[in-house]
Length: 114
Image 1: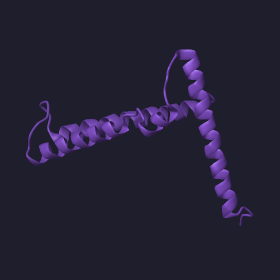
Image 2: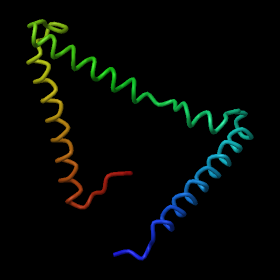
Image 3: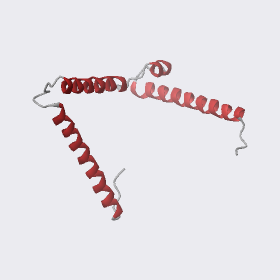
Image 4: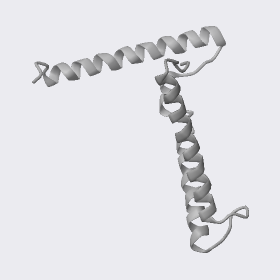
């Protein structure tokens, strides 16, 4: 299997974390010098500025609204839940067709820009 022991793996993980922390500290120091930002690296790690939780909450809320509208036979913006599901299905079909089209182009030698 592997000649690496668990202690060596733990030591490696700790070294990687220490290097990551040093890199973050260097980055924040450079940002402060260049842009005048005074951000504490520990503070930004505890309170990330991402909106993932908000987006997940909004998606769940919208899903519940569509399910409730379907159950009680309401319409949202003049559209029934079935019409909304069909619009989502058509949108996904469009994306799938676009991906297939790009794959066909790439198979002919053209590479998509990165």
